[in-house]
Length: 311
Ligand code: CP
Ligand code: NVA
Image (cartoon, rainbow, N blue to C red; front, side):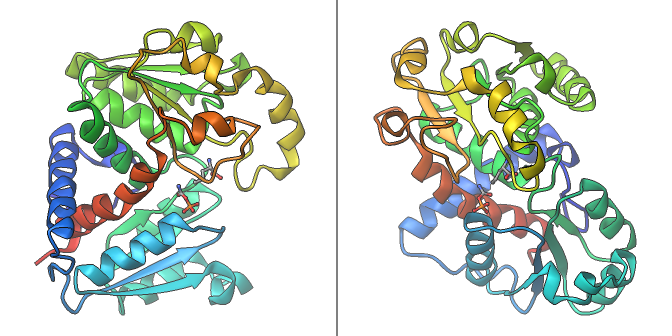
């Protein structure tokens, strides 16, 4: 499973594969807590990590994941490679394929990842694009399973920009696993129709559901999970003011959280902008599982890499 394949979207996994990755991620976590950090399934293998935009969690958790699997991570900024001087992606992909066992990249344009995957002879992994953030969603459903025991049948509400990369991947992962996904977003920021179509297919097969509404209060009522992300993503600086004004009524604050189930959890991929999409009291309060969620990036990525490249 997953061996030799690209991971550009959650849709590159079958529901069964997503379940298996989550199960292995949980095992990786248990073993790490029991003192077994190093599980050398990638012994001698090298993974290139290329970043066109900043990163804290993804970069560090991927480097540690590769190292703890006995492999070697090589991290680059896009601009320090010849890519920054205009060497074509297709040339870079073919050359790197002669040196490394996988290429992982964080890019502005999802199409650039598709171009990389088309020309690379090794698997290409999406570390976030303008369209999706699949590794985040894998850690997110792992976190929901850890906190709630399952995704199936739960009401998972994303509040904010429905076209957000993190939202897109979450929509796919939750509907794949039989969750009831609700997106609360302004009419102008509804999820991409292609993502919606996939989510509808997953929901029909899994017994889950997908719904987009405008009113965050209506959406959050009875929620098991409330999730949000920044209003202005990396690369959206030019439309920042427009997005802030569209999303003004979509802040996750204590008043909104009180409409959710009493034992609801609050999730955020981080980094968060306190006072904008979420208030300090929610982020730091009893609902919040964001630190465990961030930690789970490491365990989830160890699982993904083990399936993709493991010996
Ligand atoms: N959540 C996430 O991907 O964070 P970074 O931008 O710090 O990698
Ligand atoms: N939507 C955010 C996620 C950051 C992890 C962005 O793309 O900037």
